[in-house]
Amino acid sequence: MINLMPKYAAAGILGTVAMTMFLIIAPVIGMPKMAPWELLSDILGVSLVLGWVLHFAIGILFGMGYGFIFAPKIHMHNICLKGTTYGILSLIIAQTSIFILNMLFQISLVHDIVLWQLIVMLVGHIVFGIVTAMLIEENNVLHAF
Image (cartoon, rainbow, N blue to C red; front, side, top):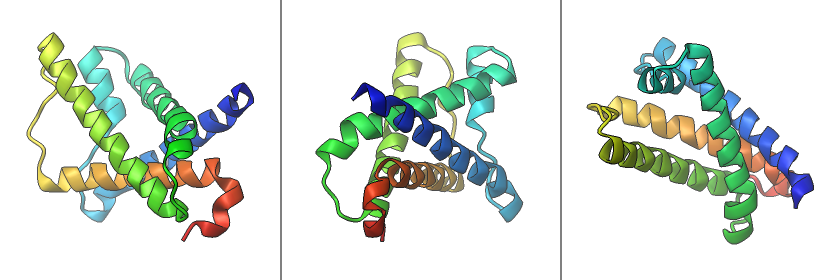
């Protein structure tokens, strides 16, 4: 199991790269800007570099979560659907975490989210989930679609 950690971490990193690429491109195609690395930097009062590091660290944790918890327990033959499901779940977990942090520490993390921002966040997390799933379940890639 421990020898799978680097694979799951790498999948989380590459999933985060794919998600980040989408988030960077989104404003170019007319969607609102969503930059979680800037949000983390602002919320925690740390440098933008540390915001980026935290963004990728969270991606690694979610990659591990997929490999060790989600994939073994959720049995779907379609890897894209499985990744989409995990992406949606990761968005729900992220938003719930923000809500809980706001309640516990009275930090102003909650802001008005318009529909387009929610769509960008949803698509970004789905991209993360699909890339992560396909990398972790590479042996089942024939069942991707």
